[in-house]
Image (cartoon, rainbow, N blue to C red; front, top):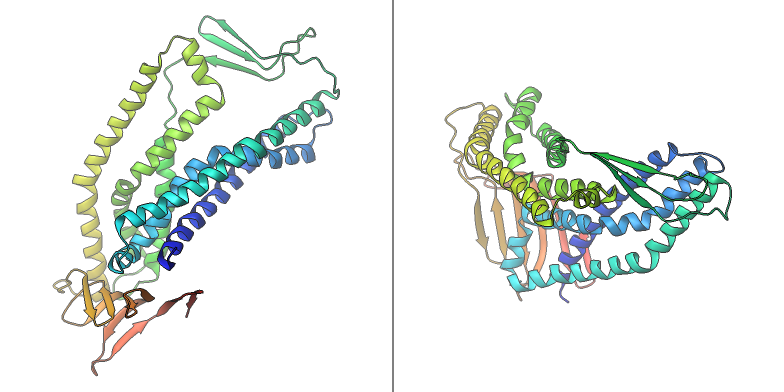
Length: 385
């Protein structure tokens, strides 16, 4: 396996692992908080904490698919944003090989998921639930029967267990009405809030001229529609998984099926939600996002350089021997913005990747590079400076 292939796989798996840790931390916290509401008998705060920890493998098994999706998008998105995918293609890495590396990463995650789901999660989850029930009711030999469903008009009850003492444990009561949980919208708002915050922080580093903090804040706000257009697919996916997962976790899908809702009708409702999101995405992406994004970027450039008629061109790629440069913009003042520099060996393998936050040429025709960072690749790894 080549250096670039290993780098690609490592990026995807690392991103997935980091997303998994964040999701597990949140899930474990919510699990612990929910258990604090049910402490009784010998089941106190320490036992609730132990229960939450023992549940983590099973929770990770349930979350690995969404973590893999988000991690892959973040990893590949980072590579694309830094033009590293372009460099890999330039270095001779074919699309088929790129897809193969992504597939191999997926196989590794599938094996990991199978091990967790078959051999680690279920026994620990069973032990945690048994410990909780024994602690709550302070007896080990309690006659705990199977669960039961009871329907009464528009109300359906789910009893955790049936026994002669008429103590049924956890009870779920479902009433049917027209309320719907807008999971995708909530996920979209959370993602937009984070994206807007990161956008604003990144703009604070580039304030100059008439482009100050208020203008950076306005720029971030104007960018939100375009950011929402880019995030709607992932928000729809996460929202759908959360919404349907919540329904399944609370056995509400079973209740809906019991109430006579067919699988085809359930699929149709999901499809209708998708059509609504597609229409909304098209409106944002065609008529709202692009003009606001263009206005925001123009306002930023005019504020930075304090002139309206500045000739700011598009980005450009420049090749000089074994070096390829990517300039953020071309203009007569020789201020090129962010610069990426890719060096190749004689055998066309990638030697190093460098990035400068700002670049230009002074009066002596010498390059000026701000915050220059370089990563050099070797057979035994990589070094940075």
